Image (tube, rainbow, N blue to C red; front, side, top):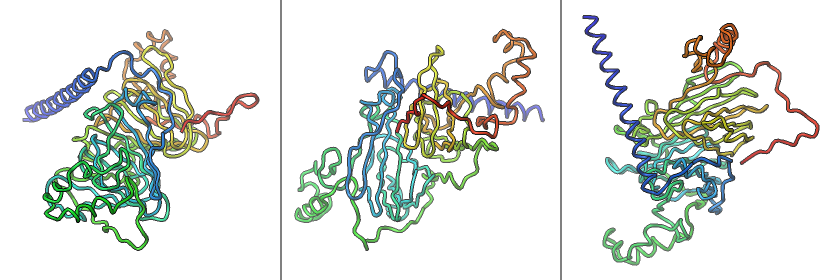
Length: 428
């Protein structure tokens, strides 16, 4: 009986693993077909040097910055896009939807966020969330949202999207449901004849004119003092389960003394991600700690530095260094799938989020308790490095406690060489 049960469990695991593998392979083939359709080819990810975001919009309510694909080719190569919204107190992002799935992270302040689903009860208060620094929000393609800063400090929201199924690689297009006509942030309503809108809403054309003309602002406006917006009434949706992951209230997946902590936000913690094919890792490194060098098996990653400073190094397949740069708060770095990468915190620590093009990010590491070298027989590693077994055994016995996050080798801070050495160059 026990053998029968064991065999059955084995078959279930085998079937699940095989199905997952086929699903990942199909997604990879779909991405490659999409790139071929767009005419992409040649050697991608030639330039991983980070770029500064470009300010695209500013008003009393806030501003929009974007890392543009034309200036940051690596984003286009990864079929990703990134933008940052800053909301001043009482700033309101007018209702809109976008043409790609995205993950948004609140990196400063608080806000109310409304979301409208294409089925079920349309009561707007049902899906009004209060989000705060550290919260991760999944936003499906085509689903309308709005954001409002009801606090006294500015709110910053970073959005990273997968543009595989969008109109243009590395670019997200917003479709605003309201607002004055202002370039790419004009309301979609302005493309319809007023007669058509009047018939659709069952009102006269004069009413339509007021709806279209009274709002002079676009994209982000500032709400007058005394105006009340919907209260927070977080509802539970039975299909997607939820759209917000409270990272600061959740237990870390990895925690290392004097090293830091790591949280993976995947399809199991936030089920909606399985429909978006996106995932995220939140990392907090203590001063001078590092994340073990390693690579992603199944996803490109876009890293955004939330706090602190440090260094990121990325390596190509042939051992050539693809990137070695200092980073600080506001920096954005693209890490291609399979490219080994290491992140090292500076003396003030390093907090960052990494958005992945897979709903279950998987990685391998070159050091720590989970090092790939510890999964290869000692004799094979020794012969491969051309060293004796004793030396390999000595290396293998180090870092047996720490997983993924590695604390500094001593309690003393590492100091840069002084003298004529230039100050570190930071990229924002």
